Image (cartoon, rainbow, N blue to C red; front, top):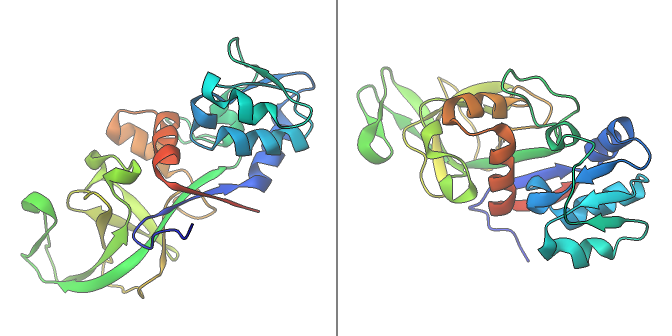
Length: 231
């Protein structure tokens, strides 16, 4: 299936998960893959863990059959895990600290840009009005993909090397970013969180703004987004 150009991608790093599993999971330890692998995809994560020598996982009942097909795995539906899911997947704590590198990254792209003059407003309800002349970008990614609406006017995303503010309300499939005097070509990647740049630990700030935990948001975004495994 071809991914829609109007939707962001949930990029999942196989290498990051492999490194975390080898560093954090002792022989015979049980790994928690409930909530569809906490948004990372229970079946796909189980395959990576099995390749790394992990032997025991906990999953939701609906994922038992597909995960059991992975050679060498013992599958449980109850019990306690020996590794915190946030640590395994590199999800930051409220203070931004992590045990390992992020496995998940949410990446959209610029659909279009246009000038915004001082005094003009953007998005529903006009909750943001430009103080100075600037240029804004319409970016893929909205509440239908699990980005909390409350983040509008309160968080930044990464475009190139810059961290730039999301302005106005989050819409269903898009949001608006103030380019703050710069510009961006159509198709330019936009990183919401994860990766290796300034947005790496943005989920920690999202948690402080939204009242949700970073792990809860990863679950929702993973379930609503288009997952794509990368190296």
